[in-house]
Image (tube, rainbow, N blue to C red; front, top):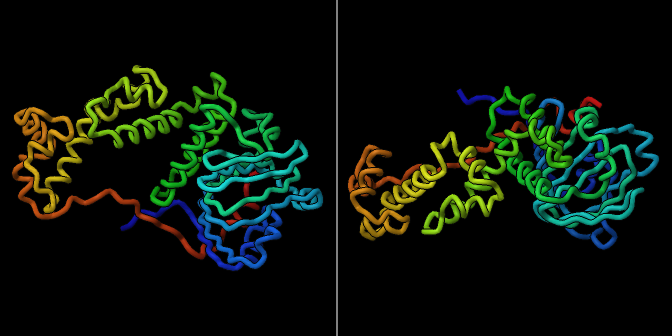
Length: 339
């Protein structure tokens, strides 16, 4: 039986009027003056994580408006944090005018007025009730329309990106814990006090470990891939790096494991005709006897036996699950958020 996934709802349209009606729970939206006749596309998928909602969207150019009348009328009191993977924003708020670009996280206080113009964009939007953040971040509203800055803000962007990519494959049951961890990350990255950072340590280390693994994966061929290089790239001490890879048996063992996996994939590829020793040497295994020993220890087969296999190893893949047409959808979830 396939395990149930986190509740989600999906939306897609090529009609601006349909999109306008769907997002009306949060914003009034308008076409930009020079875009009235152009094609508009919008796709979005939202996930309900306990008291927060996470949405991933690809949207055409448009203007979002929360006028004084709209703010008074709907009483919306949540925060929205938008991570722009592509595109950006130009915002007008009572505090001033702000601009941002891809890779940044914009903070929006829905209890305040806002006009923001956005180009074609791809983004992750996090809707959070004020009550979940106001104790740890009493001044969050001061960032309305702008973006946090500094190294912790970069970690926050990486965390939101990772969260959105993983949500479609996560099993139901852990939404409350994940919601709490996400709020802890927000507090630590926007206001990195000793207390906030200590509470959010698991989430921060998750992002740092992901950053380290991406660095390693891109340099598996390099003879200069070592602990010092990783520490410099990720911005952590050796002690922290070793802690990040405790569950992997250590960072050096992790590197060796990933190199062996690359070699295994190559040997199972019928189009790879180089000698086994050449393939191994490409990934730093210069002694054939040592390579053969560690390879057999990991896979239970010699490299030569592995080469005799004709099938490709199954590649890691992300399985996408979505519940289309749930009784409760995005607008219901936003209205139901605890204020």
